[in-house]
Length: 275
Image 1: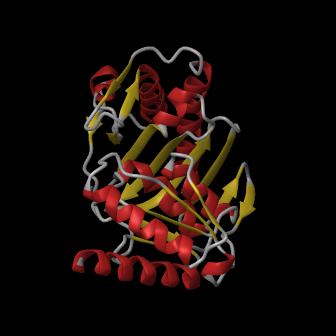
Image 2 (image 1 turned 45 degrees about the vertical axis):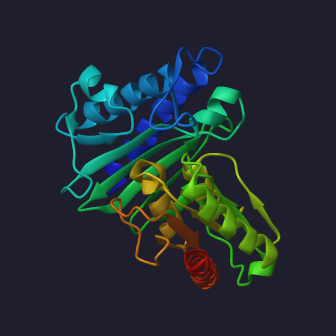
């Protein structure tokens, strides 16, 4: 497991170097599925750097990369999210923040076995720090052990979240849950635009709970093991354990707070469905 963790860290930091070097030269910016879902030349360049770092260690490695162009550029084999072993890569998580120069973007790399995250690393590019974890080893921030918070009440919790690209019904649902948490009340709610960093905040105890709808597996694959190894519970919105094929969102917090968050999310979603 040490070699796999080292590979995840090396790959994430290789991608981060590209992102950092190109921060003032992002090149062409285009939209993907929604006008608010952005991709830049830097996303692709960082993806190439990450893929090459992994392939240098294991030429047979199979990858799942957010940006499709990466496969052809490096000659990588596409993997399956529930395959025996696959690296899941998000070259720039928080591209909108990156484009605007807002310091809320990261590079995320995770190794999944049969859909279960076993190693991962997230580099907070603006802060130049890397959080990493492997199954059974705990979570570390630049080598220093970290743990999730022990908050056990919503009224003492700082939460983090994000907003969907689809500004129709998914946004209505998120706004309803956001209002419910604010009225709980919680200490506060923060949003920086990177789900991978949100998971890091939970793992390090900087924030107490994280929820978000409509995420992709590369957004949270590394974050899931970072949170778990730091003592947090990570599920989808329905309370099922995190998996790369779940599409109902994510809830991450220490076990006590997680249950309180999940109860409020479920109740609010049910009320919204009854309207």
